[in-house]
Image (cartoon, rainbow, N blue to C red):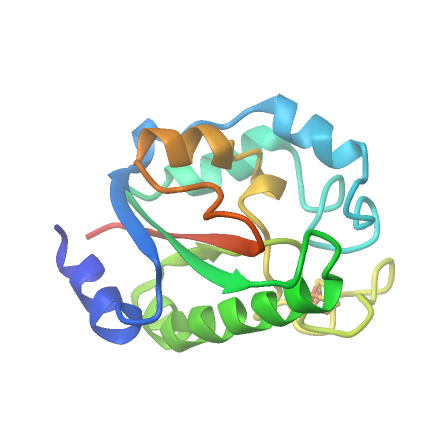
Length: 177
Ligand code: SF4
């Protein structure tokens, strides 16, 4: 385990559900994931700066991830009433974001990078197509960069789902040491 991962765990270890450290060379990027974004099931396609197609092309985004040697993948799990509980999912996302926020200072000071869960939710409504209000804080998701999170979770033995009436959120931190 790298020193960086140990530092992350010392900050959020008690709040995350599962995690794995891997070399970025083993990550899977797929045009198929971006194609799913184009189906716009989440409603964010072409609506924010951090979602396709405005976030950039797959090769550029993949290159940004592969510029780092390691990735630390982690999940948080949240209870919801049922699969229609949008408010519960929203609250779970807020809790996941709060966990992410605790490691942002470490990420900033070490030049690491984080890809979060879902589209950027810093602003209530994204400024797109006007310029991003907070380019230093705007968050891109793993899927928006073409990462196949389902396959990755299998490979790393991290549960993609954690049972009925729960929602699981993923994040990935990229770093070099
Ligand atoms: S910070 Fe605001 S304007 Fe920028 S991408 Fe996120 S939601 Fe959009």
